[in-house]
Amino acid sequence: MILEIKDVFKSFQQPGAGSLDVLTHINLSLSPGQTLAITGQSGSGKTTLLSLIAGLDNPDKGQVILDGQNLCGMTESRLSQYRAMKIGIVFQQFHLMPHLSALENISLPLEILRQKNIQEQTRAMLEKVGLNDRRHHLPGQLSGGECQRVAIARALIIRPALLLADEPTGNLDIETGEKVAQLLFDLVEKENKTLILVTHNPNLARRCQKIRNLEQGRLI
Ligand SMILES: Nc1ncnc2c1ncn2[C@@H]1O[C@H](COP(=O)(O)OP(=O)(O)OP(=O)(O)O)[C@@H](O)[C@H]1O
Ligand SMILES: [Mg+2]
Image (cartoon, rainbow, N blue to C red; front, side, top):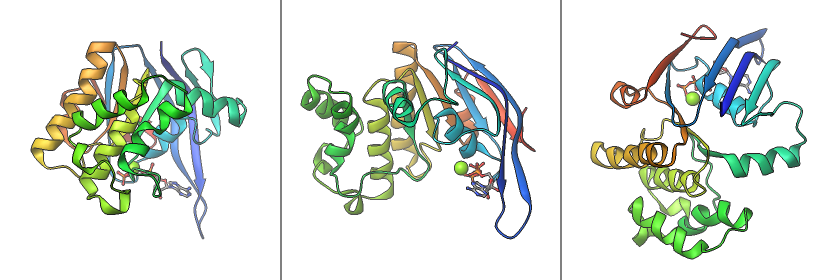
């Protein structure tokens, strides 16, 4: 198993109100090569679940085990190292570095991991997402869909064992969205990686081997 989630709970204190149980009794296991789509209404907890899987937040109860290691309880520095090696994340709000160019945002994970051939790998990835002619733009100088493609390129560039994508084609036109989706599925198929895709798009969800709906805190 690349990912095991065991009986995870997460609630948030609501501003001005009581606490909200966003996730209750979440269980999930995925092996290499598997693809899972998570659907569910706005506010159902999809992004919250991805944050727990990425170790960006801790569950109140339960375990998140990535490639045999329990993320809960790892020190912050060990966790960021582990995350950098194993997980590619495409955030719903992109979270690009505003002061870095498209090219620099994409190559950053390679720099952090001190990989070789950074220039060549970044060039090839810029080509794949169709942003070669925008490579020196800062995120503020790019369109929403261009930022989204930078975010996807940055997630894919380390060829992570686990790829988490939160509405990865939400800002893209049909044709570009199709190209970008193909990049995600290509990585999974050719390199036996694992993909968790959050989407409201039924056509995209159907391309995954499994579909789970988040409803009232549970994966159905
Ligand atoms: N830090 C927080 N503090 C309080 N409430 C939060 C916090 N983060 C999320 N929530 C609440 O938890 C619920 C789930 O949020 P989440 O972002 O996971 O939803 P989502 O399924 O990703 O929705 P969307 O489809 O709109 O992106 C929401 O009702 C949200 O208001
Ligand atoms: Mg969300």
